[in-house]
Length: 419
Image (cartoon, rainbow, N blue to C red):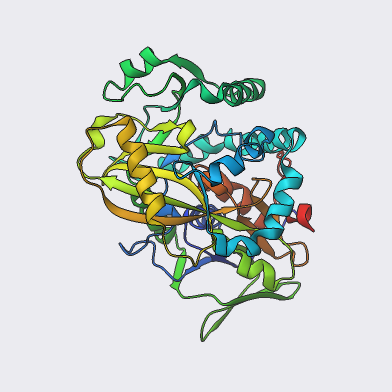
């Protein structure tokens, strides 16, 4: 193993996971080709790495597999002013996902997810800083912290979150309503309290950052082929084959980093991975980004706002409905209403966007080799934290591909847990 060097790697997906993985592999001297049907340098690139909230959230250890949330789900689904929605035509396709979700929605699983999200989240900012030293981030990243606000309505849930973060050693500073207004004087005081993670940072332009990292990958000798990949297989101990519409490519190893679209490949490989998608939306309020100086998330509403280059980006809601259903006007309106509840001075919105968060029912990503095909490596399923976890995923997966030892426990992220 000491002298082993991987000869070639193909990566399916040019979002933040794929590009960071490619960059780390190139730095190890391993030839890499990234495939995607969209060119990340094109302005037509509107994937999740373009449209996300832009938060680097190393504190976000708690996910939705919580008994306290399960209790509220029916109420949320039937409320027109709630953070959760369902495309009813998609429900039959989600039975498998719901089955695993209910199995994972208990205190023990919640703490397991929190522990192993913390393991990688805790390394996430340092992993980005390492990359940021090599690219020009002028006007692209701001370090002003991130604020959560809430009302006293769901205090039990808020207390649970604060306690679990404390137990894991996550730094947080509780704020009163008055302290929040001092930091963000334009906010309407429709909340009662909050917390600031003052070491967190946010992207002024997520796509701009992705482009810089991608350019560095190409400068270092990485290759990119714009192509719609159809199938993937491992045909021998030392070869994987990636097939596009009219061409096939051979690599020693292949990394699947296709976000919500990764299931197409895991199904082909005969693995039962219940990957599905949470549909998330955004709108921009042009030239209104100066109304707040850092991201603000309103937990009661499942919604947030980030000051960005394109304006104030309002993002949020969870809609379960797959990748083929059309965007929902009701969800867009929900985000606009939430934004105006906090900032009534907002004018007209523009740029309505829908993107897909690849989510597994225990809310941990899948990182590591395929069960049946050891030369095919998975890097997907980061749900709301794909942006935050891009750089550390790249680091971890490049180590897996190169056969390096790690002091991280990677077993909780294995696809074994579903098979």
